[in-house]
Image (cartoon, rainbow, N blue to C red; front, side, top):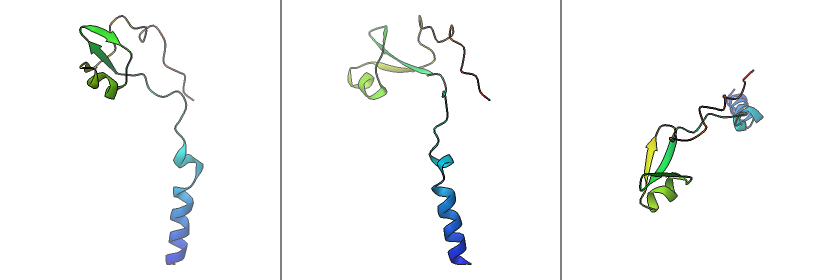
Length: 72
């Protein structure tokens, strides 16, 4: 019984669904502001450059103009 449970756990953990990242993803909800200007940087690069990693869609961005990807 113990071996059966171990095999079942391994099958579930190693299944392709466990590694599926999905399609599309979600829209970015943070942006970097350095000196009042919005720049394209990662969180790490932004804070290293002395910027602020702000929550919310960047002003002047086209995130609101593009619709989210369709899901099934």
